[in-house]
Amino acid sequence: MSPFAAMPPKSFEVKPKLDESGTPIGELLEISMGPHHPSTHGVFRMDVVLDGETVVKLKPVFGYLHRNHEKIGENISYLSSMPYTDRLDYLCSMTNNWAYALTVEKLAGLAVPERAEYIRVIMAELTRLQNHTCLIGFFVQDMGALGTPMMYAFREREKILDLFESVSGARMMCNYMRFGGVRVDVSDEWLAQTKKVVSDYGKFLDEFGTFLTENEILLARTQFVGVLPKELAINASITGPMLRAAGVNYDLRKVDKYGIYSRFDFKVPLGEHGDIYDRYMVRVLEMRESIKILEQALRGIPAGPIMDPKSKLRGFRPKAGEVYGRIEGPKGELGFYLISDGSPNPYRYRVRPPSFINLTILEDMCLGHKISDAVVILGSVDIVLGEVDR
Amino acid sequence: METPEQIKARIEQTLPPVKLDILPNECPAGERALLVEAGRAFDVAKFLRDDAQLRLDYCSNVTGIDWPETVVKTKVKKKMLVEGAEKEVEETIETLRSGHLEVAYHLYSMALKHGPVVLKLRTENRADQTHLPSLTPLWRGAEFQEREIFDLFGVVFDGHPDLRRILMWDEFKDFPMRKDYVAPDDLEYEPTPHDEVLDAAKKHYPAEAKPEVKAEVKA
Image (tube, rainbow over all chains, first blue to last red):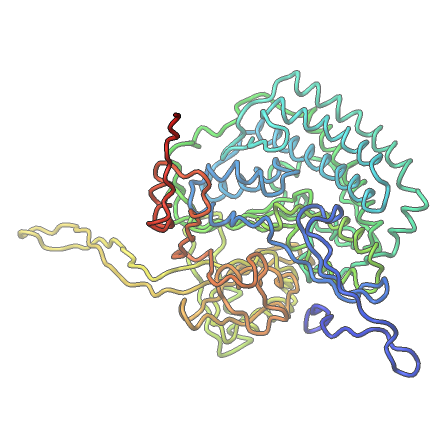
């Protein structure tokens, strides 16, 4: 291993290409892509310098949605932050809730009843399904397949959001988990409906796969584009499907075995080349594994209470101390770092946002590629600006 | 994985003279952090990353914590002679804790799948000596997170390749995550002020420019 990490490329010294006699050919063009560009997945801007169509410099600029989520978290009580975590990554509110609840439970020493653990796994895996489905829709749209694939993806996603709505009252801002359990119990009808959605999901993936996975255009646009080497991925703290596409076997569901993930039989799909195609394929295979987990969880869910009797909603004051909790969110490692000083509000409330940190190496991946590839590379990172800007 | 004490002992053996402290953590599920003096932090971090037993190749989370100057009250039980008999008396001791900014690094190992080791660095004070060595040359993953701490807490990382504000705009002057930060009141932009908002917004209106409402008189 090299003594130092790969430092960011010194792209600010860019010069246009030279011809044989040493005179520059043409001029560099600096453009500002975004913040209201349809392919930037929100209010995100890239300062790009182009030599012809080739990217020679790319600096991500964000913060347009910054509302200082962490400061707000320090000024309100522990429980009041729960609905606020929905708004971080607004596609996966269930996993955000779980990460926060898990950290507070670690801090306060609360246990979660068996049934609530099962419900959490079901919700988290449904979230993973709909997040990856959505992402593939968006990302195919970034490549120019306007409309149709995304509509198919959204049709399936809506079925899962209907399940969320019927149990929590909201499609996206679910606010469903509580410290020591979940807010409302699920009914038998809901479980039966979920079973049907899950068993149909494989058919949808087959259909989607026929259209996309071996599509000539998709292969041409994604293979060996935006390659992320294994060493750089580890060093740059990349997590989630992006890391596993680079071939690193690191899934927190296997490493930390939080919740009850040790009970389920599933595999961790890994990529080989670390290019966009691998990132796409890892997500597709992860959805197949999620279906396997969901089938096992729906079969094994026991009856029982859904809240730890020790947990209380009012007057909740964990003892002083600090704790870092993390889960495998659909986008990567979602962590919360809490310091309690014994008062009703946390002294320090920190979110470790996966999409923010996954953006670190955006420039490294885009350099030398065409500007149209930069759009697809950004799409394959899977960012949500509510989480990046916080 | 090794306990903080074992790691501390090995670092002190390999890299003398380095001063390390283990910070207490009252939460049983939490980890105790290693506090490193800023001058040797880079060497210690490099040891943690490259050591064969630890191999902490993954810097998961980097965050800042603001500790302003406060009076810490600790209660101590003392045995004293009260009216001839020995009694336990509680005594409160007030100590002044100097203010500083703290940066915490949560380090894991992807190769050996263990962790975390929490590394903490402290600045001298919160006003002028807020410099710390950057660990981005060791872990690229700290690049944006250190920029965020610079932006929101005002810790200056020496050796960072590209230290700029990241979430706030470049012209912004203050550090919003500090405990003594006061948000500016933007009530002059309030379109329809009323009640307490009106009282607070009044000071933004010049006294003579009060809009006067005249009743229209119909002839």
